[in-house]
Image 1 (cartoon, rainbow, N blue to C red):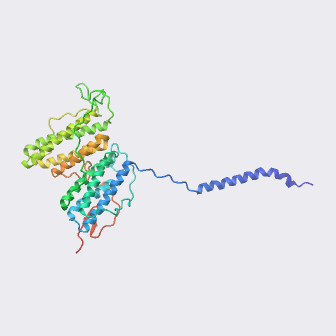
Image 2: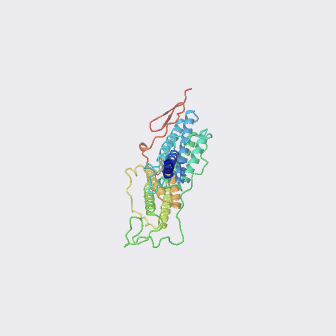
Image 3: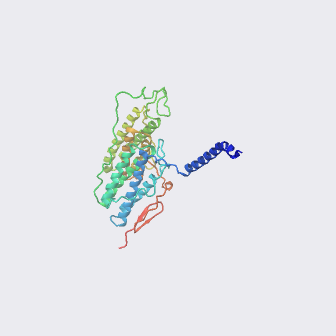
Length: 393
């Protein structure tokens, strides 16, 4: 008699194979699920982000060096305190690329903020006031250079920070009685530019019957390759220079003899800047800015012309800061140099160009810096500023 189990065995084979295959599939799927996926390599920071992080790190390094020098009594605290405060404000501004400061019409920076410990003081930092002066000058020059190629509002932030650092280097050197900065303080803005032929399809001069459009070109005129925002910013800079020329012409007869000479030179500088801006505006196919017969002067302008000229110079910083943020290429380089020279002229008349010339800062909206170790004899005040007291003898 045959064994029935042998008769059913061939029919069981497919079922067993299916069960085993299903079990193997479950095991493999569980194994793949438990093995963590390999994380993708972090994206390479952009040129703009690297420039911002470098500026942030340099500001923190120099701030720490200034605090150490003041606490050690290496220099008068009255000379170092303004530098520490300046670098504190700049570091807070550079720390937040997504804030209103860095958000310009063409801003392209990322939203990442640097790590709290990303800017440790280097082993060979400034060890005395003279070295800190040179470090400020070197950093300021580097920031101005980076501003020529960075994106949008970050470029404006770098240009303002670099300008203020160069000013701080000169002030600290004078106050501490040490040699002045050895780094180049940047070049003066170029004069009027010329180009063979016209880059515009038609003449950019507005005809009496041709109304001007909001983008700075004449109606019926094909715009050039320059973006409309750049044309508007160039026009604003030219308008600011024309108003400065008018203000100097009104102030000159009322200035003291010792002030009249420098004022005449600065008046000529403003005329040159206005001509250079108009030339760049023409090359950008923009509508020339008509000169106004007069401007409304601030109350008390004629009674205190020197002080009024300082305020007038400070008012030219914002248009150049906007032009830095919006323009590119040669227009950007010209705007960076013009911003730096405008800050210097403001100082000539005793006006303060601010911690970041070209930007009106609201320090209350800036992020606080990460907590740092405070040197002995110092105390950190609200807002991140540093009050240094001499160590006990």
